[in-house]
Image (tube, rainbow, N blue to C red):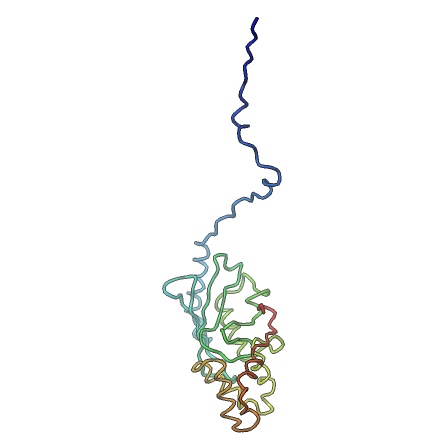
Length: 228
């Protein structure tokens, strides 16, 4: 008697091996899409508020090329500071998860200041670890405007400017003010060199390596919010 053996194929669900435990741990659920509509509405609201009230405070901003996430801001230097009667342009880039994350803000106009470097980066705590979702564009611009007249010389981005600021009463304000006024007209480092030579003539500042000395001063970055 012949016995016929029937081979049964395993269920199709077993034809493909299941992910190993290690692989399954690497699978992450997809992140929730960002609600850009709510961010857009928030920025539109801030824009209207700034247009109605910002001018009296010496600050303003408006979207660049109709892009609500990219603004060009303007601040006027405060009265009684070396920046009085000067106007500065800034760029503001808002992230998609604003206001839970701070915008990126930089000076577009060259600014000679202890807390601003030659690239326009700003050392300001509310743009970093002190940021709050309760802040808005007007808060940022007013804070930067205040920073112009009240720098934090403990965390300078431009230590040359910080040293001059600290010694203004010793006569070095003769250097600081011209640097502030001319910074938007010339390359940042050349302003420091040209103005210093003009004011001090042929004395010890008239050495050939003055530019290197000034550069060494400016490159000392002690701001905790910038990487070296």
